Length: 157
Image (tube, rainbow, N blue to C red; front, side):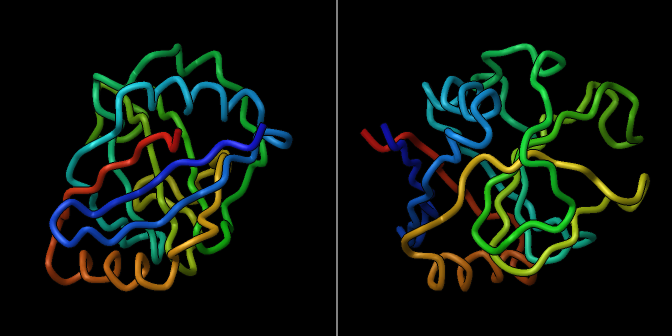
């Protein structure tokens, strides 16, 4: 069964649909699907150190799994436009995240995943936007100049 998620900017209504990489990253897809039992909704930040990428520290309501038990699958530091990524950084791994970072990432263009503090950031790829990327990317790019925007990520029934 092919599964999809929808990403929607709350204010503009611009959305895109991504297909999960269930066959290639089954464990990561399983936990991301579980996390999306409740839609992720929050202020996404532009991750300027990496390129054309948005990120959010996965909200508490979506933390429905033990992040230390999730293997890295489809590992990358050079993602493709439209990919959704996941990484977990434990407490105190980075100065700005003393309680850890549940890194939920949306790549909308060219990106080389990195942290200003630690260098390359290896992430798991778990989905890729198949519909709506050009308009979604244009709206995402506005975050670089305008600041955070509310984004909703939810399962497609």
